[in-house]
Image 1 (cartoon, rainbow, N blue to C red):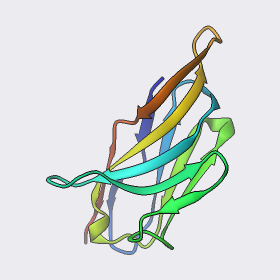
Image 2 (tube, rainbow, N blue to C red):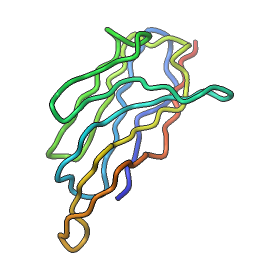
Image 3 (cartoon, rainbow, N blue to C red):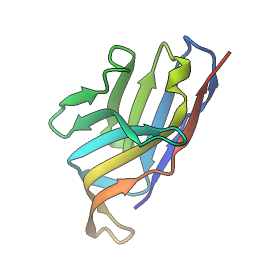
Length: 125
């Protein structure tokens, strides 16, 4: 199974973007979905997470501006980013933990942790 992240780009300060992370196979169940971001020379940091029970957690720097959500029918997790700031500039990665999915033959498979390839977000005037 692969995760395809998209939606990044160049936006002015104060603008909005919505990132998407789509699984290549039908998701049967999962434990949690998380968006991370990383800038060159720094460690990857957690931005937002959503558990299967619906509990969300956000980095202090994005609280009130970012929203994580999921569309089960589309096998997709989103990150709505509003009021973007230059310090939000980074490569954003999605991660799914405890993923159980249906393979090409309809067989249930499990992967403990799956990462997307990253999408660049640049906030600049």
